[in-house]
Length: 427
Ligand SMILES: *Cc1c(COP(=O)(O)O)cnc(C)c1O
Image (cartoon, rainbow, N blue to C red; front, side, top):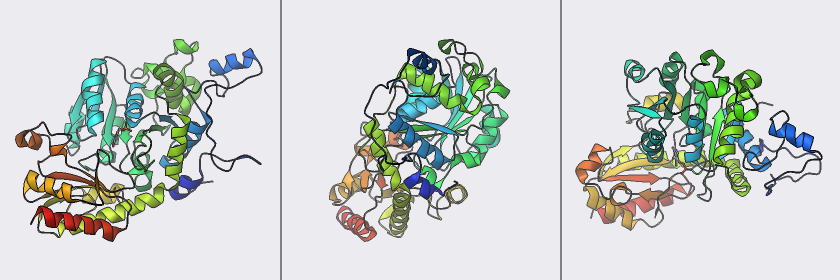
């Protein structure tokens, strides 16, 4: 059956047979029993499907991966222990020491460090490009050893909308896949594969789980990228895997190649596996994802419009506003809405921002975004507090910048809280 994403959120992934539990069971077992060592051997050789050890696969996690796969319209998917693990595995599955990645420069700070520091230590080079660059500038970033292109649908925290078709076109012209982190938009608002992305990743920690209770990630493969057509670039998928008696993922397993290798080889060796209970909690969150995202977006738009109309506010950045430079791209890629995160500045700079933050009653000051509760962060006095105003400006985080993650509370209460805090901050 082909369902709407809203139905997939509730129904897809786990289908009980007659007399089985209605709700996805937590299979809290590291291991699985078989009648013969012969059969176990065939599982280890990947000749037969079946569970054998929960570092690689677990029925609870697999059911949730199937749901996320359906939501993204992908071919196969896997869960990981965090969003960081998802982005690392998505790239490291196809990129080796000596290779190169082209990435949008406006990405989550943790992913920026992963690419710029840790993966460089592993011998993997990266070139960051301005996501608003021309096709010519993007093409110029490629090298003969480029193996992947990376970007975020809607960047955290700068809210830049990625021109997915531009990035996909350039990636494909150079014979490499486009990997897109779709954490902020979620498949409710945007399905990057429909615009040419080959692999989609998530920090499920944010809207997908939605309640700030569980860290997790996911990798979804479209099955569309033709590894064999670029066999020389991707030996890990197109040459025999000696650790599996010469299995050739792309030749022998077709569209399953990418996720099969990520599971059988990457997870086996790196073990970034989610706990079954984490997958269960993620699934509970996913059941209400469509409803929550709709409310997050409606509330955030109302808050962004109210802030924009308030003369005490210096600027508002929200791609859902018609004044946003990304409004047209947002309309194209996510016409139903963008996300619940807004950034803005109060006239009066760092001092007014601090007074505003300290006066909020409903919105909590936390280092998190994208969960059910409204929360705020003032980077200049927290995550970036060691920087001067000049250094802050250089990295695009002004001393006045407030990041507001609008929750799903009743809109009038959110607006009233912001108004009373502004009254105190600007009196
Ligand atoms: C939070 C986040 C990550 C990292 O995810 P964790 O689950 O915290 O490891 C990656 N990408 C984006 C866009 C994020 O917002």
